[in-house]
Image (cartoon, rainbow, N blue to C red; front, side):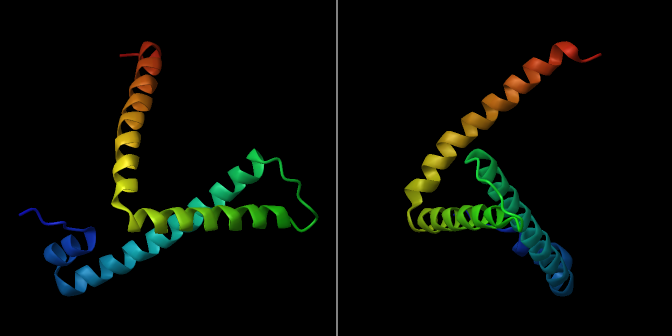
Length: 114
């Protein structure tokens, strides 16, 4: 039977109880920072995409960040309840990522000085 082993379990296995807890706190901190950056940057891109104007306080940027966070939260909530969403995402994004990477390498390869 295949076990689903996460990072936190691996930390505890290889670093012991105290090391696993320290690494877990570090993982939580990095995850929190990444989530904040992702939501902020996504909201900024949504703001630019929708051509929303900003007032003196920049309230429309805050609004677009809130809209982006709510939409992402609703999507992730639905995806966690329905396994079919995760399968479709994997079936789309793995080939799309491979295609994007391959096209990037093939575009840059002629300019490389090997």
